[in-house]
Image (cartoon, rainbow, N blue to C red; front, side):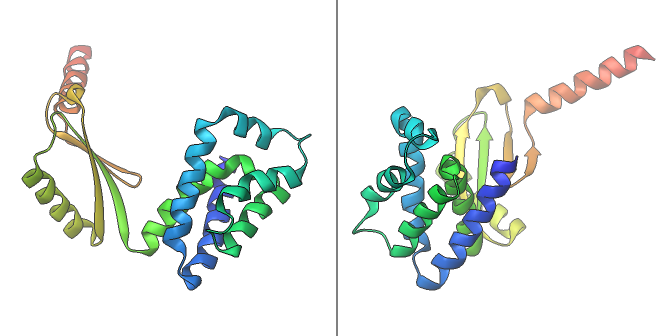
Length: 182
């Protein structure tokens, strides 16, 4: 939990720097690429988490792929993470920066799970309804999940809208058990 709070603070601070210089989208892509590399490369994780590895080497490893392509503010940010021993929360920072950048652009990410794949007309209609409901631009990520048995599950931020048949069957089963106890 502490790492998530720290990640949010670092992401928010970086966003305050990137917004005025117009590099938010560029930094977002670089952070997400760094997150992928961090998760994919165990050796990278080991080096960054090892306290005996000199900070200069850690900085060099983090900065090298971005030198010549990234703005100095991003490279300085990576160095700051190493100086403060926060390089191991890079994936959390990347996720939080992604969310904060979307929010600053007025975009809300919505995850939809349906019992069968959504057709393009259904997907467009759902996106339109959600945009009217939320009042912001929606970026919809849809997946199919046969375990829902019908209906769909919609996640908007921390809000869950469960209109699945599986949930309704579960609620009905709980009501029957309640009635049997009486």
